[in-house]
Length: 353
Ligand SMILES: Cc1cc2nc3c(=O)[nH]c(=O)nc-3n(C[C@H](O)[C@H](O)[C@H](O)COP(=O)(O)O)c2cc1C
Image 1 (spheres, helix red, strand yellow):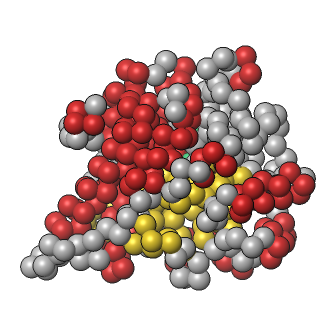
Image 2 (image 1 turned 90 degrees about the vertical axis):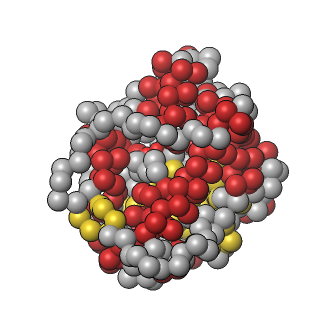
Image 3 (image 1 turned 60 degrees about the horizontal axis):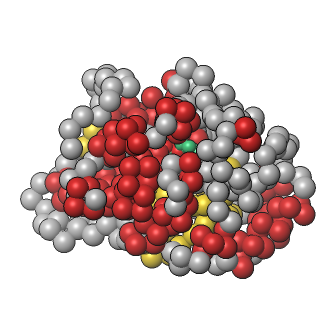
């Protein structure tokens, strides 16, 4: 299987996943909210930035290794939190965690994981825990304590999910036998009535970096820094929450400008090529997260597939750095990208290898 995967792109993994998964599961993973405008636009938006490569620079030794919140990683590509991965493959989050660990990447474990954090942490890679928070601090504190005890490097608070099941298609919870139990997250409505005071209290009381996921407004980027967060993730939840929300490739530069280097900024949504990672870094992101690409790999071939997803992005990133004359991720100039003047084709399937 691994040899067979050696030449497969993210698009190829997606095709393999579509053949492997049930129609319901594939729809759950691939879909976005309502008309799926944001879900499709996220991908197209990376095409609205073009490279302005520099030439005659010796970038043969270009390295994709970097640090994220001080942790050394093999590339600036993290695994986004995604619910219920056992639906994609029987090994679920364990396979993803092994792939992430082997690739030297950070995995953000979803609160709606089909495995408890202790089991996933035992694999030994770098792990962060994503939480949806409510005013019920007892449950929240116990999850944060478990994350700390398991050696998690950060807590990611997802702030863009005001409606629980959202409007994207989803298998019907407990009635669907394929939908695994969620050991850390009992089903049911979540209380999202939290505000910036809550975040400020959390960052002052919790002895771990707090990262806010789901920031699109520059003003919220500033508030995140003001309230003691360690980083923000510019994200619209892969187009699965507010349809019509701005694409992350468009929102990123304004958030970066507002945050002004006070905290780290990451981005996710629609990233399917290593070159798009390079564009994100040129626009000021320290790192990116990828969601569906890892799920496609997981569904297609378990750990080997999830590993391939991370590996192909990393390889493409290194190749594109060399082609664009970028020697190091510490110096990706803003001038490396410019706005595309040509409307890119919207929502077309990716082709080729
Ligand atoms: C099937 C699926 C489940 C997800 N579950 C979660 C989740 O539990 N928590 C969360 O913060 N984000 C969740 N997300 C959003 C991802 O973390 C991420 O923001 C998004 O997938 C990035 O876009 P991409 O899939 O185009 O890379 C989920 C996304 C998908 C596709």
